[in-house]
Image (cartoon, rainbow, N blue to C red; front, side, top):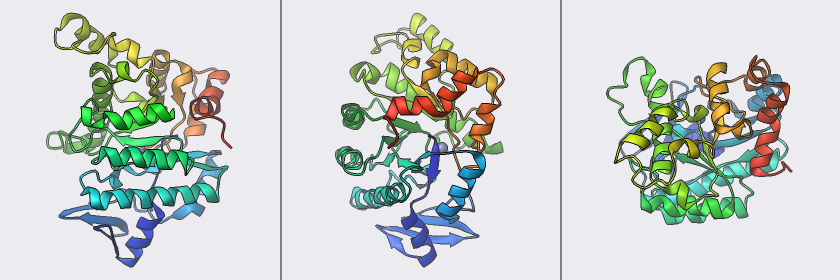
Length: 327
Ligand SMILES: [Zn+2]
C-alpha cells in the first residue's frame, strides 16, 4: 500500500515547460523539476516519465496485483499559497482518479490534501472519498513545521475518522536537515524520525484518545516509534511532562496503528509485527524510490520468521480488512 506516483499532469507540464497554479515545471538532466517561488526541486528518480505501461510491467514481473497510489512526497507542497494549492491538489487527485478508473482492478488511491488550509483539506478529503472512491489520504509528517496534535489540524483527522478511511502518515521534508546532511542521513534517520515524531504527537498529544476510531498507518514500519517504544513507556512512567495529556501508556497506542513492511530487515519487521499485531502489517514497497523495497512480494514470501498464514495476511488480507473489499 505504500506506493508513490507523480500526477500525469505534472509529467505533461514538465514536457511542455508549463506552469500549473504557480508551479513551473520542466526537465533538468532527465529529472522532473518544479519551482514555486524560489523553491526549485528535482524529483529524486530519473524515470519519472516512465508512465503506466512501465509500472504495469514492473507489477507483473514482481507478482504485484494491486497498488494504492499516493503522491510522491517530494511533490507535496504544503508551503504554497492556498489559492494555488487548493486547485492544484484537486487536479492531482483528479489525475489519480483517472488512473484508477483506467485500471480499477490494479489501482486505488490515497488523496493528497491542501493541509495548509485545513478547511479545504477536509472538503477535498470528502470529495475524493465520497465522489472519487479514494480509500484514504496521505498526510505529511508535519505541515510546514506544525505537528499533528496542533488544534488547527484536528478537523482533518476528525473527517478521516468520520469517513472511516485511514490516514497514511509519511515523512516529508525532514527537520534537522543541517546535522543530517552527510551520508543521506536526512533519509536514513530523518525520515523515520519524522514518522516517530508524528506518532508521538498523535499519541502523547491526546489525538488518539479523542479519535478512538481513527485508523493511522505509519510509513517504513513505524519509523523508530515501535522499536523504541520502551523508552516512551519509561518516560511516561517517570517523567511528569510526558503523560500530560495521553490517557494510556504509549504501548497501548502502538497496538492501534498500522505499519507497512518497508523495513529492509526481517528481525525488525517481526518485532514490529509482534507489537502492532500481524493484522496491522501491510505490504508496501515505496516504489519507485531507491530507498524502497522494490520486490515486496518476493521479499515477504521469503521471510523465514513469518508463517504462511501470516504472509498471506500481510500480502493480501489485511489491506481489505482495512479499506474494504477491492471492487
Ligand atoms: Zn514513501
